[in-house]
Length: 207
Image 1 (cartoon, rainbow, N blue to C red):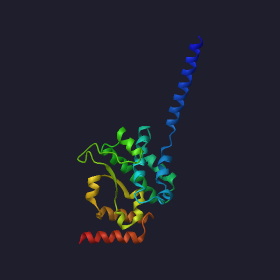
Image 2: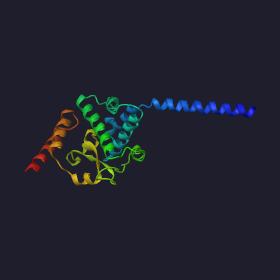
Image 3: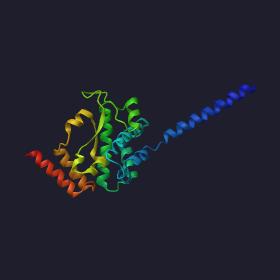
Image 4: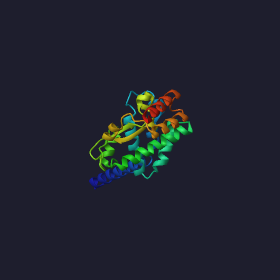
């Protein structure tokens, strides 16, 4: 009888722990986790390339939120608010970039358990779908950071891209880069001097 009681007590403890674990998982604050990765004051302190693993981690958190039944868009928008993006345009551009990168990771088959395992650690997952299969899903600077080193730490300027495609793109400045530069300038994320350099690079390409 004593053994039976001991086992029943152990079972109760295990069930209670499991219940608390599940309850805690349901309360995981994904927006807060992402906010800690993209907060402007933290990004400003990073060394070159320091924001790249944060994009990987943020995308992994968005996927974790989706798997937990949360909407990706709402999670991203809440994260941006918590991170302190008070400028409406800057907040919208940053949330859009997070959502877009999550979509890109899914498109290339990187949101598998294995891919998420890499991204949670800030590493580049391996592309599992499409013509770039087998390559790493690296972080690209839409507007080349050579035109403004600060762009290396602007979330809205960072985009997941297969490594070979990223290398082929190089320092290209086309219509997309010009359009984004103007939006970043309007949002206070790019200086007028940097905008001028981007526009000059775009004109040089068009000659």
